Image 1 (cartoon, one colour):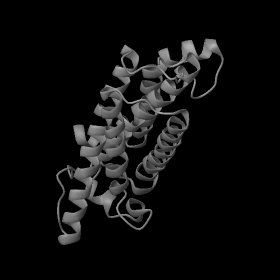
Image 2 (cartoon, rainbow, N blue to C red; image 1 turned 180 degrees about the vertical axis):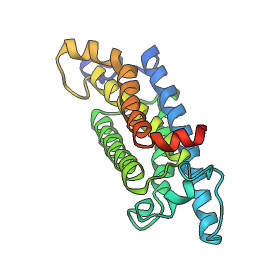
Image 3 (cartoon, rainbow, N blue to C red; image 1 turned 135 degrees about the vertical axis):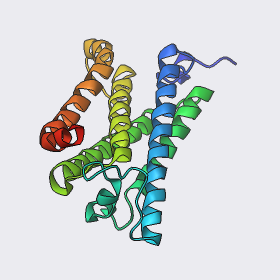
Length: 208
């Protein structure tokens, strides 16, 4: 017999354009984040094999992945941080593909994803602070991760607001998601603006 209305989940159907666009966002950000993390793992393994290895993103004293990956901050939990990225972004990719294929997840699952992306963003911001103010060097692959993680975290949060996973007022659920990309751009402008100010003299010397 046909299911009663009360048997149905209140989460949106994946055939809605918003959910399909969100699935693509997960696939794209997850894919880019996975590739960047894998590149960092590869370069770190090369350093293990050859202490004098010059990585593919060692451009100069400022843009130097090798400097960053040789610091204690690059192995906060006793192993290279990019291993976390490989696992995390593989999960993001899988979720995106599942949604695109028609999967629907319970509210508790979306809350778990929300906690995951928030913790991932806090870790990313910590790494940004360390490279900018402590290590005094920047990693191009890391910066790619900063960008995709910011886009991922903001859009996951706004999706959860839009669908009622994160309870807000009806007006908030309608208006806040429309500001998703504006918020992403503002966060990235702050992060990279601070980097520009912090390394202004280095940037001038690079351009001269």
